[in-house]
Image (tube, rainbow, N blue to C red; front, top):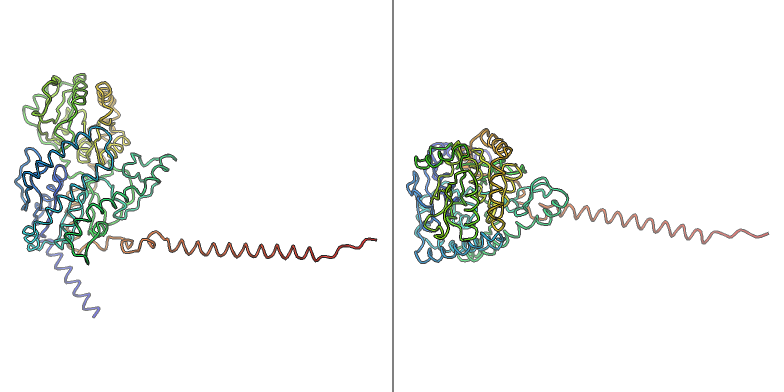
Amino acid sequence: MAGGWGSLKLVLLLVLHLHGLQGAKILTICFVSGSHFLLMDEISRILQDNGHDVRMFRQIGYGDLPGNDMSTPYAVTSYTMEKEFLKENEESFKERQKKLFSGRVGVQYQFRVINLFADHCQIYMNQTDILDFLKQQKYDIAIIDAFNPCHFLVAEKLGLPYIAFFPGLFINSLAIGLPSPPSYVPTFRSFLTDRMNFLGRLKNTFMYLDPYMVEKKNEAIFRRVIERHFPADSRPSLLELYQKAELWLYNADFSIEFARPLLPHVQCIGGLLAKPANPVSQDIEDFIAKSGESGFIVMTLGSLISSIPRLDLVKEINSAFANIPQKVIWRYKTSQWPKDVKLAPNVRLMDWVNQNDLLGHPKIRLLVTHGGLNSLTEAVYHGVPVLGIPLFGDQFDNLVRIKAKRMGEYIPPNEIKSENFADAIRKIVENKSYKTSAMKQRAILRSRPFPPDKQLVGWVEHIIQSGGGSHLKPYSYQQPWYQHYLLDVILLISACVSVTICFIVKIIILFARLMSSSRKKKPKPKQN
């Protein structure tokens, strides 16, 4: 019987291997727009170009990128939000943007985003026609954007094994069981480096469980979705779905991230969007040429931030640009530029920029950015120093790492004034140490033994051909929490030590009593 099962397993693995070589059917899922879509689009293109049959399930209409070419080499199944719903969300996003530029955005903003994801998820999970169609396609595996918990629920509803791709650094490390010693692994939102003094380690220790509490809150937010769309006897928790992923791929690279322990089922493929630059258009080239030896600066605050809702901040930044010698290409929606603000003569506004191509231009001097990981990785790839304006999420932590690597600085938006902003630009451009550090990080990123696209294809095919990623996961996933943290062992040792101490104390007390008793019984010496 055992021999028969062994032969069957060998045949099954051989079939899977041959199937993988011929091309697997892969479903990618992405309901988040902006840079998240750009990454999932790139993943889908890479796998399609390497002989796999790829289809993306995505939403259209909310947060679409300007000028985005909807033609793809892979198939797309999409859902378009209703116009009234889109309008309501657009107005809500405008209000949220005002808070982003206040410099006081905390974890509550993240919960508002998760609530929005949960509301959207109710809509996606109700698309039974689409879900039934995707089930009938019988995909070998799904690759999902792990930032949105809804993607896990959709993959589970479709009954597909899945690979989780996380578009940022390791902010969910506790949820997936990564070892995260607080002595040198900074906690999300701690704004610490890996080189902490005593007070830093104390702060990091107190904040250690904060990400876990955030995940518990996310679980509570998505509970209404899970209860509505899964039967009572098989309702998964988000934590179970995180640990069910066959593999975790992170958009991270240690040219930016601090060194930390990983597990075999966690791999880094950061830099998918960073590529050799193409020539810029002639009109942009003509604008750059006018900068002479001073060069030019690129400013962009991410794919979803097309303007700044604070007039005072626009004036301060514009005034700062007017007082530097460099030309500036500023990604800003021209129709939303304040009519009563005269644009600085050395600034060109553009509704959309090809950031990667601009960063690869020989006259680039600085990237002014919100601190998104894709932007920072492109800056590292091209060896460009950075000035950050962090707005929310992981951007503060990302820029802490850039500063620690000595390739840039950052200023929170509520602290920006014309003078300090211009001074920061001059400091980074004129102090060559920032450029030197940026080139050092570039060498680290570019000299990796295997480029990220090859790692992506290799790991996906490995998971398909080996029938899953269980061989990469630690046994801790199956252990009860008290065994994982050795509480049963600690309890036994504590009990043994306590019993031993009690026994020793009793022996000492007994011995002391015997000594005291013998002294009392000892006869007094006779007097002459």
